[in-house]
Image (cartoon, rainbow, N blue to C red; front, side):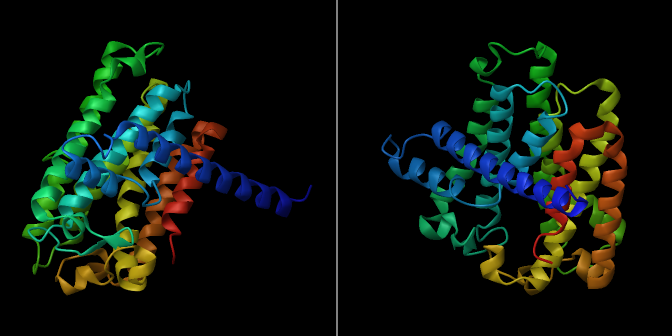
Length: 307
């Protein structure tokens, strides 16, 4: 078989894996979310509306790919991927509200506060965040697990930090305070590492919870670089992509006068920065061998999104 055929088959295998995992996490989320007919019906309906049938599920994919670096435990991987997606969904619901970024569209449909109302959207975010930790801490997920009690606690600790004031919530706070201001590249990087990168990193580190200690530093370096690259790509897509492609309002950052990698570095330099971050991520994890191939493929998937 030629190298061209090898590459083609590898690409098809990756595409199939992505589709399979996307379907699987959708099914897993559907099972863990409360039934819409269970009181309070509107809240539960809105939770399902916000968490299901949308997005590429990149955070869940990263979690599943990282789980391949060690002894794969399906229940733990599912709980971790589900918890990550619930935290992400909650953040989007709150992010879209008028008191935050005030966006009427998310994942190609009306934002939660537009489909329902602002009070319901606020409660949806709260409830999705709580559900994430409920799912991650369910004892049944660890009944036949080889994870130690310390490792099980570390899962919760990792996700808590990523979602909190030193992670996603803190990054959003910096983002809101930075509207109309010029940030240095260093300040911008700090904001993005917290706002977006922290949850991307957590997705990988949760999946790799049982990876060998000797591999943890390499995995952390990969997670750090690809988490930042993800946000730089988002900044570029906000300029270059349309609303239909994005599933949210295009050009929102410029309209809101927010500092981004494009406004700080320029479009061409921002794209070059993505490539540098990608190269650093791959250099960090390549020594782990074939078991890191899924993460390497996902890194390419992340930086090649529609540009």
